Length: 363
Image (cartoon, rainbow, N blue to C red; front, side, top):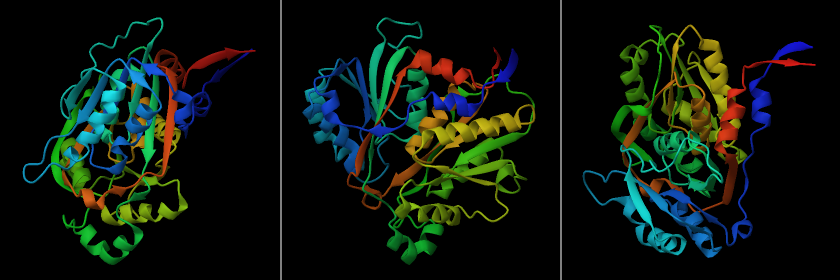
C-alpha cells in the first residue's frame, strides 16, 4: 500500500468532453429549466429554434438580458420576436433577468433531490459574466446539467479587416471594433473571495478585443498593476481551435499591447478542460504567496472552465468588466456548428473536482 495524490489530469479525465449536438437525440425530451440569453448575434436563437422544432419542452425558462445602451437602438432587441416565438413552443413560463442582478434561480436547492432538476443552459449568447454567475448557482445546486453552444460561422474582425485596419483597432476606434468602452467593472457578488490573507495580488486575466475592459479590471484590483505588474498578471490568450482563426491570438496580443516581457499563456478557446487545468496550475503555484483573482473576458467555453475551477476554490475572487457598447455589424455572423456539454449530475461533478490534490491510499 502507498499514498498518492490525485492530479488535475486524472480529475479532468473523468469529466465529459464537448460533443456535437444532434437535435434528433432530444426529440420529445423535457427539462425543468431552460436558460438562454437574448443577444443580437445570428446564433442567439439557433438552439432555441432547433429545440422547439425537435419537440423539446421545459417547465420554465429564464432569459438573460443586457442593459440597454444609453443612446441609440438596443441591438439585443433585434432577435426578441424570434426568441419569443421559439420559447412559446418550449414553455409557458418565461422570466427575464438583467445583467448585474441576481438571476432568478432561488428555486434551485443545494440539498440532493431524487430525481435531480433537469437543466439546459444555452451559453451561445451569454456573456462571460452571465456564464460564471449562472453556473455558480447551477453547480452548487443538485441538477442534471447540460450546456449547449452554437459556434459562429464568422467572428469579427475578419483577417482582412484586421490587416487593413489594425492600427485603428489598437487605437480603439469605436467605429471599427466589435465592442467599445467600459460599461461597468465590479467584483463578482458570487465570487468575492473568502478567507483572504494579507498577500500580494496575482491576476489570471483572459483578455478580449477590448483592451479598455482589461485595464479597468486591473485598475479595480490594484492600480499599480497597470504600471508595473512584475509578473503579477498572467495574460491567458485564447487559441482558436480552427486553424483559419489562429491568427487572432497574435491580434489580441497586439491590441492589448503585450510585449515579450508580458507573462502570457496560450489556452484553447474551445477545450474547457484546458482552462481548468491552467487555473489549477496557477492556483497551486501561487498558494500561500498571493491572492488569486480571475478576470474572464475570453471565450464562452473558457468561462465555463473558469466556473468549474471556481466551484472548489471559494477563496479566488472574480472581477467582471462589461463593454460600454457593441458594434453588432462587426461581431459574429452565421452558425457553423451546434455543440453540447453533458455535465450530468452536479453533485457528482463537484465530487470529482474536489478530488484534485487529495491524498489517497492505494494498494
